[in-house]
Length: 151
Image (tube, rainbow, N blue to C red; front, side):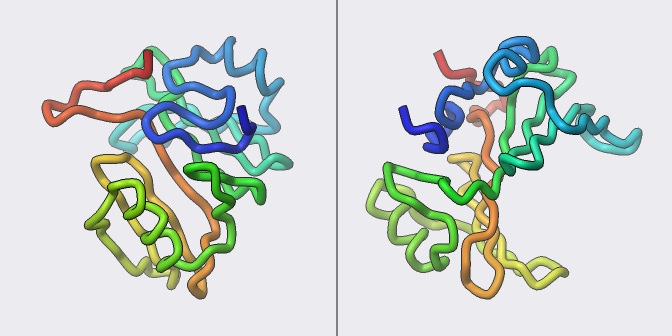
């Protein structure tokens, strides 16, 4: 499997949502830094940052600190088998649409970036000057807010 292939709702390459911290450590090694969530954060979590590889891996406390979200700006990023880093918003929307995912929400951030969100698919794609910069994606959550761990 391609190491930087995003599989919606499942993970990226060998990293699967639902993995324990020990399983992630065995795959990735020690993170360069570990961030704890702020006290006023809605969700208590730990973020493991692998700065050189360009990954941040999130573990939520309420999910027993299992891997639930990945943020990455890795240059080798792929989605549906296609490289996506640096692609335009239109190209990403076209790729998603070809795979049956339509009607994303778009928001311009205060920093000027544009966030393209596919809420049901749990993926946010961030663009600066119409080039994909980074992606944040997570485990699927059902309509009644139950986490859908990949089997």
